[in-house]
Image 1 (cartoon, rainbow, N blue to C red):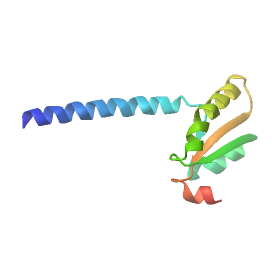
Image 2 (tube, rainbow, N blue to C red):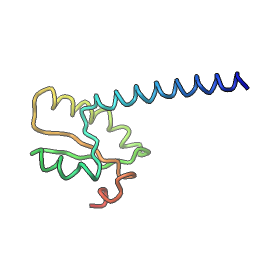
Image 3 (cartoon, rainbow, N blue to C red):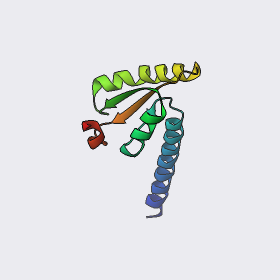
Image 4 (cartoon, rainbow, N blue to C red):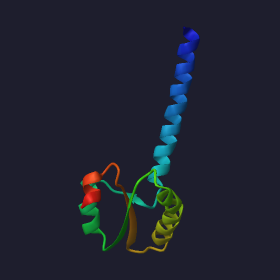
Length: 98
C-alpha cells in the first residue's frame, strides 16, 4: 500500500511539473489566445488583428500553428502594431459562430 502511495505521489509531482512548464511556455507565446470574455476588448484595443479560429484536432490548424507563432513573434520583435490571435472554436463555440 505504501508503494502505491509513493508511486502516486511521484506521478502527481511529475504531472504538476509538466503542467507548470506548459503554463510558463504558454505565456511565452506571441500569438494571443482569446476567449469570449477578452475578444471584443482586444479587437477594439488593437488596430490590426488577424484572428485564427481553430480546432485543436484539425490537421491544417496543427500545421499552421508553428508558422503562425513565428509570424506573430516577428511582428512583435519588429514593434509592429499588428497582432496575431487565436480562438479555440471548439471551446468558444458562441464566439466562433459570430
